[in-house]
Length: 252
Image 1: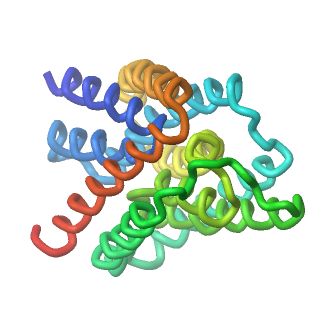
Image 2 (image 1 turned 90 degrees about the horizontal axis):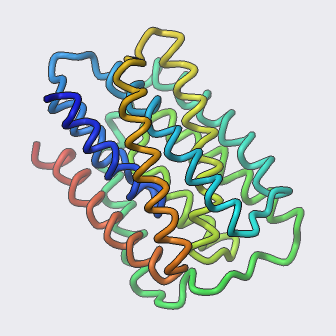
């Protein structure tokens, strides 16, 4: 019964995550509900061992239909991998609890800005300078990769927002690009969790199959309906993240 619950949750997490990120909002609480006695690190590691497959397949789907800027995204993915490793190392030294109260406020600012700027992310017009685009994407990868390794919630949404706001991408291209960087940060996290023995591979494999199925459906929906659809899903997911993180920070 517990495995059925987390597998079902993994499917919907993959669907949502493939469009705008935020799949952890669904799968992580399901894992904690199903296995309340398990160490938190083991549940986080098992979550990553499933979600990395869905994210990878979503990236593959997007790459077939969207003209990804590989010259920009290659260095950015490398920076995200380094950032993820540094963040995971930092969390062994510093308690990330101080981010709990700040996160919902940051997400609220992102949401309000996105809603106010109705034209934001509707047109794909990357910044003119290729060197500046590479530097900007790599900085985003390093900073948000560090955040993902250190704390995590909303990583995909932050990737998308910054690619739209700072690099001039539309929401569809930003979502596609974010998937590649998410794969890098997930691999960094899995490497560290696995080295410490914090992955249930037998459960992660089952969840991975469901996550991939959801991811394939979600990425096809995004590709079919375009940037406007991704923007609307982004707004809904960020609003849900605000409610979840706000509850965890100020009420629970």
